[in-house]
Length: 66
Image (tube, rainbow, N blue to C red; front, top):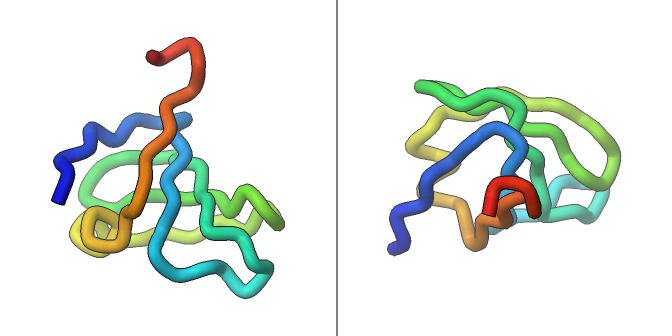
């Protein structure tokens, strides 16, 4: 399992898709809980850090943060 450094603005690909069909989520808040925004429909959720870390399949950094 890769150890990702999560930052606001990153886009994570999670294991299971959202009901809209998208698996990609933009990180809006990082801490003990993450606030994620679906890139498909814009729905926002709060998710516990261990659950995000467990279900992350890929992490994309924005161009300006690379």
